[in-house]
Amino acid sequence: MSLLSYVQSFDVQAPTGNIIAGIPMNLLALPKEILDVSSVEVLIGPVDLTAVLKHVQLPPEAGVVPWPADATATTVLTNVTSGLSAAPAAGAVEAWVAAISGTVPVGVRDISDQIRIDFQWLFFNDRGMTSPAGDVVVIGGSLTSDAVTIVVPPVITELTTTDVDAFITSPASVRSLFVQLKIRGRVGNTLDTGDIFIPPIPLELKIVPIPLPSVAALFRDINLSGDSVLVTVPGGSPFSSASALLPALTTLTNLLDTINTAATVTAWATGTSGLLGAVKSLAERIPLTQNVGFKAQDSHKNLGKYNFIPVDWWWDTDIEDRGSSTIAVSAVRPIAFFQHDDFKGSKLTINALPTAGLGGAFVRNLHVNVPQSNPPGCVATTGSPSGGWGNCISSYRWE
Image (cartoon, rainbow, N blue to C red):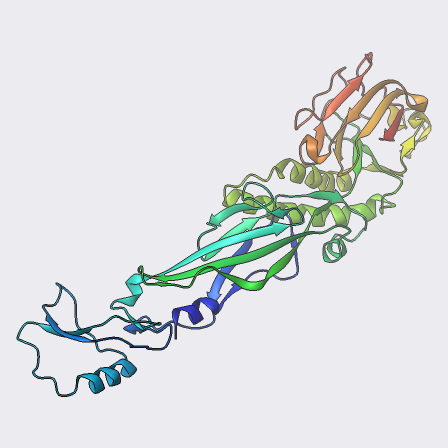
């Protein structure tokens, strides 16, 4: 088959369905046809000898082995040269030199060494062609090889259902990545197929953001432990109880672990390790806590009247004097705690949004005036609290 037909037969093998941002994608260029590299000819058109032929005898070049002409050309030469004498002199190669018009067959000896296939992967989105350092990161192969492994950097979005798997199947928001392959075939300096785009219509991949619920947990002890915890989500959250929240956190833990493992293996930093730690800690620590309170509302103005620990004789049964450390995750909003009721007094804001550590903040000691977070920069204070925050948090509000 011709080189042009071979190049045109290439297709793109790529994942199908929805692809979660941050998970590697393998793209492979595969030909549907097989090029017979043992052949000595690559035909790109008909033979057209309209020329004055000259019979010459030439010594062969070093290392060159004579090969027969195309059958059509042989017939023409036989008709034109009938009656001419003699076999070539010893040590020479008989050849016919002519001024040739039109397209002629090209003979190639050791074709496997002389054929070159050039690849170029192209990526598009709604803004036009992207760059490898932008919407697409190359983590294996290259954009000029027949196989390349890419990832779309993680995008965090709010989880709008209690079923993480259902969200991934039918997400609230999707980014489309269009993949196209440009391919070109060459034989030495003689044959050139030009640029051919495979497939004619770009292959579209659906990039699904990582779904993340907004949730903050206030623990009794300074190290995210103790006998009680208050779990709070915004009023618009799909979760109505801690028991409904936990399966989603477990599924997200597995998903983030897959992304983070791939990032470690490929030495590609996703920044999801902190988020994985926060989600995993919530999924593990909440079930181990003896007393779990749950609030699904945007704000609560008087935590001193919220008693959820079933101990009648213990006066200290509200979260107001039991919030000593916290974990927060969110895709859309920070949460603020206030020293006084009705959202008054000094204010402590925990910003666990993707821009402040890719979603996920640990604040282990609220008994200081200026608590530190991990990752750094997720906590901001307004006012000058006295005695720290651990015994003073009286109200909260999702901002």
